Amino acid sequence: MGRYEFATHRVDLPTGVFNTAVDVFARLKGKGVYRTRWWRRHGLFEGCTDRSYRKTVAELNGVRQQPGATVLRSLSNAAEDEAARLAQHLQSRADALLCEPHYDAQGRPAFQLGPKAPAEDMLPGARVADAIAECLSGNPRADIAAEELAANPVPCEPPGSRVSVSVDDVGVKKQKPARNRPADNSPRQRLAKAAAEASPGANSAPARPDKGKRKVWTTVAHVQQGQAVYTLAAASVPAVLRLVCALLAASGLAEVPLLFFTDGQRSLKDAIFEFWKQRGQIRLILDWYHLQHKCRELGSHGLKGSIAAKRVHIEELRRLLWYGLVDRAMAYIDGLPSDAVRRPEVLLQIKGYLERNRPHIPCYALRSKLGLRCSSNPVEKENDILVAHRQKNNGMSWSEHGSHALSTLAAVRRNGELDQWLLTGTLAFALPQAQAA
View 1 (spheres, helix red, strand yellow):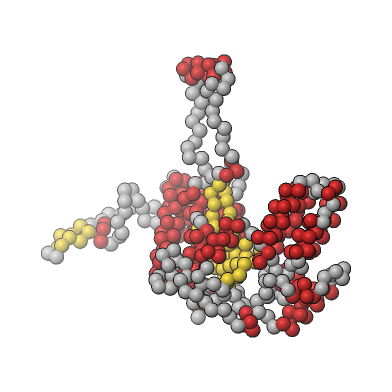
View 2: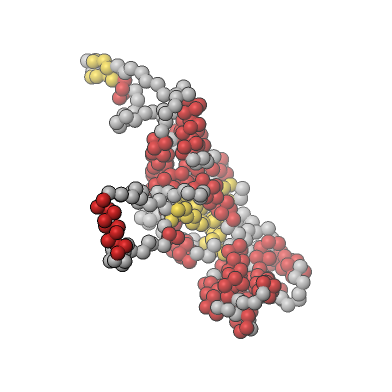
């Protein structure tokens, strides 16, 4: 229908004044308008989260046949307002779920889970032994014993016994605080420029900051229990971990063991263990793809020689880590001939990386045979859907409010809760199978 106006009426009654402008409709500030569900759906959740604001504005005005009715700045402000209401709703839900005495003021669990029996916490030994035998049968060299794989510190959990949580940060280019002003060609400015050129260094400007550090970061979490999946996005790691904890409480999974998948970022790993320190019953697995990336770093930065010669060392290191043999991988790095090493400091960094993540490096070959996850790629996909495909395009830069608003709106649509939000202004905020139960 587009935009339309109508008259309001005021009636003086013995019991008071009845005014349709304020008693029938919610109060608005300034020149505000009431936004219909169609406009919010197609303009916000299915519009600017997929396309640029300019294209979305053109489409909205074209459908409404009212050129100029919606302007770009109004649409971006509406997106931030909608995201703010969503964030406030999630915050209220989390506050209600994470209350004392079971949770502290930061939403961290204040209770402790006792250790589970080995029979409940790990797969049967016979099944693991059979899977190890299958892994070694595919090894072209008989240089790995079954005892080495069985001694890996990361046990294999029964399928479906844990809630899998993948967490990752994604950054986009940060918008400058203010646009550059056009050059001033006044006589005074030309004289000042000539004086600066005559005495170089006298009025030199400070060096520009590193552009690589100017990022707006969003933390995304992918929570999965069986076939049920829920995606969360927040401005920081503590904020998204708090939402994960509230989601588990709302889904009746507050006491289920957790299995985290990350890329090995030290601050992220430390934040996860600190958040669930009191509760316990969590494990973390290092993503296999990022572990391979460290092997490639060894070849591109730490070794010298031909590409074929480097590939031999990289593939051997990958093979050892695929079987979870951290000690043998570090010994292989130590045993590299001196004429093959270009930068020894790179080798030391990789050894430190392996040592820090030793408790989180499983036997990936064994997990693959058992059909268990080895990667945090689900959250990498969510990063692309919620943030990257919309905000990581040429020439784009974002404010913190604008970037987080789009990721928040995209998460609601991704979780299939758009209809409920538009109709009731609330979210189910629970894993689908728990909600159905």
